[in-house]
Image 1: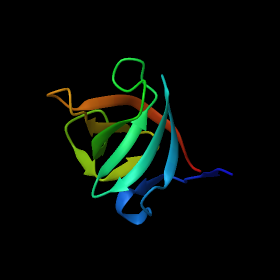
Image 2: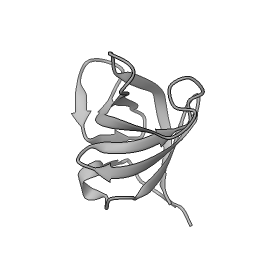
Image 3: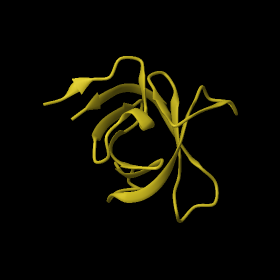
Length: 99
């Protein structure tokens, strides 16, 4: 059963192994919280077609101001992938659901 997260969620408020479904303008991601800002994420055909362990930086409004450890509707998810030097920034988050 899924429940919609209103507004957004701080990763620190989630239990480990909590699963989120994140729908952005271009993709649908599945994120499994692993604690300490780490998560397994999949849903992008290039960066994470299969689950990969990443460091979640937080969300931004499309600029350089980052809201750390937060996933917010209307914002862009930013995460660090182990195989890429620069952070990965998603399109705008439309919905966040907790499974």
